[in-house]
Image 1: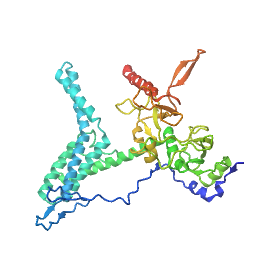
Image 2: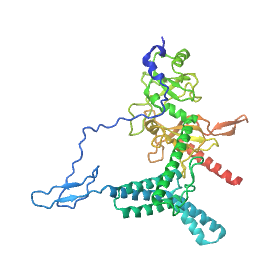
Image 3: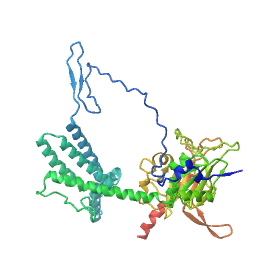
Image 4: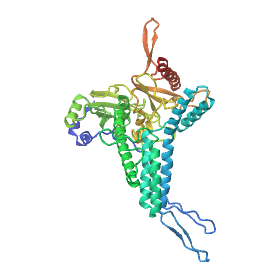
Length: 494
């Protein structure tokens, strides 16, 4: 007979539920780190009969090698002082800033060259110039405004740091004047970098007039860029939060969150008003959870609006089934295959009884736009995916799910893709290939593109272009063609 649990009567159960802090802030599961306490540092031997290389020490101390008793001369190896190190850092920062600005300059040159070609369509010289600039721009890639602003600002701060270290006044004066000119020229690369923040900071002049000292100008440029970067970072964070609230991405976050991983077997998960999984409790396999149980939880935790009960998939022998892991990779514990058993209250629409809840580490997700196209990586014919392992380990940031990549996208649908496996659990290889592993869609969430077809009775009906069982190869072929057609339509209309 099943037993109903009563969370309100169990303080241990309620500890997690009463917390009003969402559990999705850091959706990561840390793999076990190797033990390093007993590892010995490598020993370094120095031979006085060979030319000495400058040793590198963490604190940049002067290294002194004592002369042996044979009477060999005393050798002193000097590491760079603070000013030298600061100058090296300034040089590296300048190179990085120039590299970041280059695409903007190339784009401007290319625009001018195309205008010249339009005036003289038959000019072979003009055509060669356009082709050359277009090839260079393709190699560098398009300029990134925020990244470039940060690179120039890094150079400016490196200049400030160097000037603080340099004691020679004549060297300081020369470096200051030269660096201010370099920063001004770099800032001419991206458009509008001299513009201030509307209703907050003023515009600044492209080049300083004679009344402003180089020191004051350097400070003005550094502060101006710092404030723009702060504004851009704030806007970026706000836009990423908007991306995180996209229903299909909320689905990913809920199923890979810390809370979902903390209770890996029979469990009840609780959701807030926004559909985010905020916590959970473990259930015994024979225990029950019902609407009255949820009501009692909601009395104690005001943020809870709904619940979802999940149960593990088991073999005929009663053993829980683990979902596939990434090849040559193991999480701290296996991911158990679990299905949604019950839902109560307000939960996301895509949590449906009978559907799988957990995602294998072997899986990745691809996404569909509102216009019916597949979101591809720029300049490629491959989808822009979210890798489940990375999302579990590092959350939504660049090292994890990389949600910033979808800031300018309108995502309405998602397909979960996994490797295909033989009945004995081995990855299935595609015939006629050199060990290429077959992949297929295992789940579709949200709205995916469809097409109208005629049924045998002559009636038209919508058929989805992607569904569970669709091979990944067919998905790529279908949407490469579809994306190409969708790109051509606006050109034809214009």
